[in-house]
Amino acid sequence: MSEEAGIIMSVEHITKEFPAAGGKTLRACDDISFHVRKGETVAIVGESGCGKTTLLKTIMNMQPPTSGRVIFRGKDITKLTGEDKRENYRHIQMVFQDPTAAFNPKMLVKDIICEPLLNFGMVAKADVERKAMDLLAQVELPPDFANRYPHNMSGGQRQRVAIARALALEPEIIACDEATSALDVSVQDTIIKLLVKLQKEKGITYIFICHDLALVSLFCHRVTVMYLGNIMEKLDGGKLEEARHPYTQALLRAVFSTDQEKNQRIAILPGDIPSPLDLPTGCPFQNRCSYCEELCRKEKPSLQEIAPNHFVACHCSKRTTV
Amino acid sequence: MLLNLSHVDISYQGSEKPTVQDVSLELAEGERLAIVGESGSGKTTVIRAVLGCLPGGGRVSGGSITFEGKNLLDLSVDGWQKIRGKDISMIFQDSGNMMNPVHTIGKQYVEYIRVHSDMSKKEAYDKAVELLTMMNLPNPENIMESYTFELSGGMRQRVGIAMAITFQPKLLLADEPTSALDVTTQAQIVGELMYISGTNAAMIIVTHNIGVASCLGDKLMVMQGGHVVEYGKTDDVLSHPKAEYTKTLLAAVPEIGGKRYV
Image 1 (tube, rainbow over the protein chains, first blue to last red):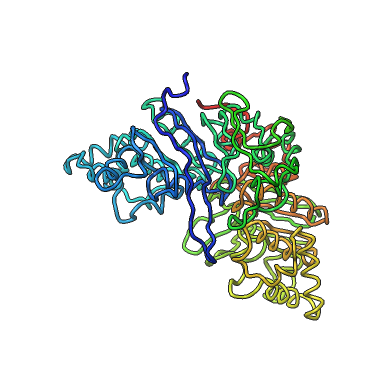
Image 2 (tube, each protein chain N blue to C red):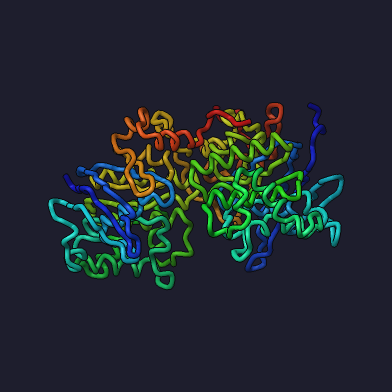
């Protein structure tokens, strides 16, 4: 596949800064670039405060970036205004972490699912019930759920309703912000299987924000690892074990397993994430990195392609063992 | 046996059937038991019953709970106060929420120590600093002056653990101690829990993270809908799960290098 083929969204050099107290600026995203290919799942992984949600809000056009652009359907969507901006929302939909908070508790499920369609005049009021049942069937829920309220169902069922609502407009991209983090593991498993099934049927593209590398490794095509607003590593989802960045490796070694032998290899990453208001010069990961050397404190590493489709921002990536 | 639960039923007000039914378990000194299960399976209810602090009109409606030979269900309020926080203590999901946000951590820590002992303020302060240091917290004096919201989740959890082990309890109850934390912080806190269990405290860890439970527990209990579906040595349960539900649960845990869906 050539470099350009199949790309439906390009995120180019997105930087987002927020003003903070004392005249400081907080740089939540620093020069973030990646491509999204049609029918693939891109995961953005990182711990709290790494800027993954800020990045998603920028991609979703909910807030303008400080600099950089997002090219989607041939246009820079961060510059859209008015009707063009509204029209753009048809093609990118979102699934949130907490489905309880994402719904109006006084609306019936059929009204929740069909609200986006009504907004864009794509369904007649008389057809709402039928359309809702259609969409419920796609997420494997019984049709009589259309006349229920969101509080009358379990967390997993609510998340299916949220997915049905996102599917209603037949978007090209669905962005999931920790969409399975609030769910139990067995429910999480069924939701992921559903997302994968829908992707195969409809060729939907997902941008999946998550902190769980093990989960991401099961179904994502591309993984982007972030730390303190910077991309540390980009690699294929099936090749996580080849990760070369010390931070990605630390994340991998912090995953608890049901395999006791693997648990023997758990390694503890010392220290806390430094304050994003007061970042050191050089590599953002320097104070927790066991490979840190003189150069890391002076100069911030840039993303280098060390293998096809595998980018690492680390001065020491030659020394980090797999 | 340090702790013995025999055929315990727990009921909440307004429900006819007991919420938790027929739970039996044994815990020896220094032993670690992990209870796993999904939301609503009753795992937290079990350890709350052990600590005698069931919320909302909950009560043990059948069976017995004995701790060091004493029947905990017969204890008076005074009797509970001697045991709770001293012989049996608890680590909560977010230790920030268990503390008062308008007082400094130091003030609450010193108060807690002085309620349970006859130390002077100075002695209590020194003891608190010593324990915070033991939990790998940098600048413990600074932490004593801080409010809970000024600390990160991992630091708050360390403070909670330090408080819980102040009096070298014989039994530590931990309710989802790592669920609110990031993965790397979770590994740090699991490390601290392993370390304190070396001090001979028995532990019951309630968690929905089966990986964490496998790592921490000598014994593993799987609960579903208020019932115990499996209970045994961790290695046995993991390698030869008997109950269908345990098998489903284990199969749903995502693993690095596991079978990919795409």
